Length: 327
Image (tube, helix red, strand yellow):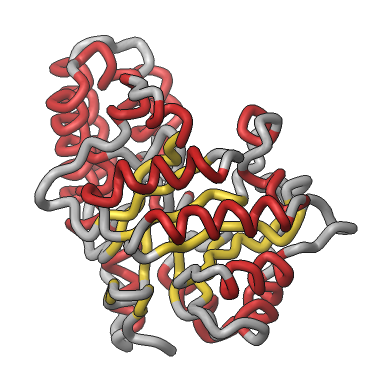
């Protein structure tokens, strides 16, 4: 298995990546993942057209800090010229650029972006070609296996990406029609890896450190991108690093969970202000407490709080109760 990953001029070790996740992978989330070993993190998916218009909400997604490095920015859109312009606009702010060709969400697909590009290889090629000419940054694309089970296009798109100058490709082995249902078919990752020469990064159903090791060994992929498995679980990076080193992973203690949740709350409030941060934190809390005793009751209670101090106290009380119930 690979101990490092080279994507053009960018080298990361170990070969683990935090995925771009809309509404999730903002600056606080990325910093927490980095604190537990994530060597490369991506921003949320960013609209090329929004960047061109200098949209306030779009620009806000680019928030970063000196500790947030190396940083990847993922762009989406269907217009080659707009994507090329967007790449030029952001290349000074990132270390790697990714083009989203896999998002299955209706709003994205209906505009001709995301997974819809899997049905239009010529447009995909034109987009990659335009962006490649616009930037010297390492360039990747993220795709699914196809629009549906009768239209598998990942191998064709993989060849196109290689021919047009992509430095790597990430495959989430589900079709657009599957959304996030059923199991990701890791065999497709192995198939793509055996077909092209540029690095292949695997994604999909990576929820534990063992999943990381299994994906690398079963598919031969060059790196692993972790998405939903990191939600409420930034320790997955630390645990994966330990497992890859032949060690038995050390799971988070109750104190770590509590400290992480409180730190996340503070960072969100510092970035967005309480009125925006509190609703954002509620969804993250549902992941931090998942599987713990009293989680359902805690989530219901947390949804009634609108102030940071109330939520801080609720978090402290919950994790104290969890510790007592384990004694």
